[in-house]
Image 1 (cartoon, rainbow, N blue to C red):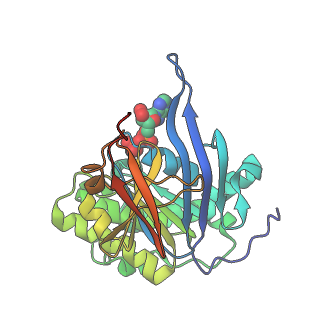
Image 2: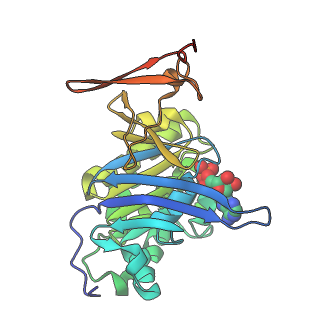
Length: 288
Ligand code: ADP
Ligand code: MG
């Protein structure tokens, strides 16, 4: 891989192939991810929706290049993360991929103003960025934070802190912005402002956005939702419609409303149709 990277003008594509992530523990390994297949196009904005413990943060850590899969592969653009050196990964994290952590106070310097926070984030990585960077004041106003003033970050509301963290997160012009539950503990008004900021990043800067949430109303605001259930990709939502996804091994996870009529263990007849298939619950055939 060459270290001279082109100036980023668009978002980064993502591809996960059968990604398994095991955490070793005394009672045996914990499988946080159990075969994730996922493709995200450059410039898409998606939500990863799932209950607590479903593996969302683990998947985000993989996409940030912070952990490597136990098996399977992760590509960011044309780069296979498993084939990159530690140095290349560090550089990727410094300039091309930005991770906004769940706790807003961990993303910001508490005594610095919004502008200083964005300036600082930008200065930290500017020497590595090798591209023209947007002035911090410009970024803040692009995210509707132009008039937040010189107050220290610690005195801002939770929603304002998250939006400043997003501005700082995109200050080096990353191609991929990853956010872990950015609307956690916010009221509906601030949740909408934060969502507006990350959609503005996606629309105005072209950055690919992956937003982890357990809140279906947050996911509904994103153009595409990928459900994560038990470390696997479940149904997908696009523009208000729900789809099951056929994974590479041919299996599908059924959406919740289908699981009500086809519970785990149910015997199902699968019948091919011209443009797909239908599933029918059926009882086992009676013997003799
Ligand atoms: P989510 O973000 O959806 O809540 P996580 O990715 O944090 O899910 O966790 C997925 C699973 O992996 C959970 O069962 C969790 O307990 C386990 N897990 C997460 N991090 C670790 C770790 N460092 N060591 C062991 N198990 C972990
Ligand atoms: Mg989490």
